Image 1 (cartoon, rainbow over the protein chains, first blue to last red):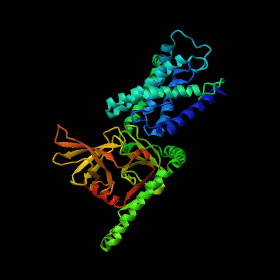
Image 2: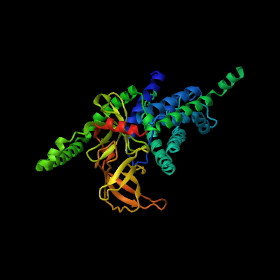
Image 3: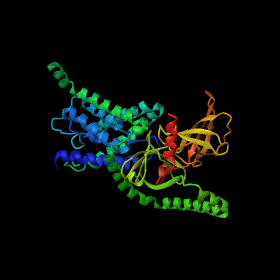
Image 4: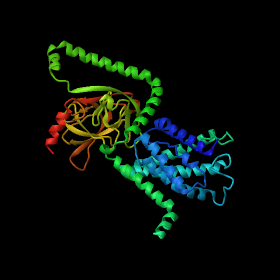
Length: 173
Length: 271
């Protein structure tokens, strides 16, 4: 399958999964997992920065359309897009990705991916909940949300990755 | 000029980031004021349609509970009817009075309870006569206020919203207060600005006050579960349990106030 089509397919799948299923899962009011950022995580490693930012922004804005919070997810996902190159550099150290087009579990090991996911989810959730608290003055509860939501999001994203890993041709979401 | 262009090219990544982030924060700040929170109508319609499809499926799994709720409400209405049938006088009263409120039934197609600002989307819109600022109730109690309307859908600012304020009244003492969400739990809200001489007990009923232009008087809001005297200032706060269960909300009624234009023109005179 064409790589662009794959990304579009993954985008639609993740957005639908997020707004129709995950957003309706109620775990005590403080746990708000977000898995749509997997789309930004899976973009090509050497993608030009401006494309990364624009795609991050539009992904967030799409989610905002459904949740009625214009700017909230867009801001957080843009921030994730900004940090992504640095996160990849930090985690990989001297490792080079000449043969690897985009992050995937078939070519990169699970530990690398777990660290990558934790870093991305934390950056995204922190900026998301921070943007929320900025406007709503509920800082203590926001911290509680971060502590409780990050592990669940990481867990869900890793599960998604492993479900779609088995297909060697890379037709993961 | 050339050096400026070079600067932009060199730092385009950071500049674009700042630009996008500023757009996000502006959007976010603008949406804080719910009167200006007008989504583009076509977009809202498309989103509403999608939620309608998905909720049609999930509705099947709740038919049992929905049926029971409707049956309970029917029973209550029949009871009311039997009371008015008994005393002819009251029947006369009702007939002679103008109908002030019209109730438009609607189905909830999307609902959130976990955000700091929660909205509900229903499947009735402008073509069904829904307008912004109409009150919304369920069979159990009040739900929120219509914030935005598209052709076939409307979004409701739920009680679970940081901007939501409702004038309420204690059933026993007739004292007024204002209801805010204040807790991040979808079951509980806070009634603020209660004078200290008011004696409150657990289980006291809280109703809508007569001074609201949005809700009819005496609609069920919730029951007091906890009272906290506040040291600073002369006003108390009570924690109430909402009568409406926002997590299982399926059917609601939008209230059209027939006298709204009259009230609005009167209010306009004060400005």
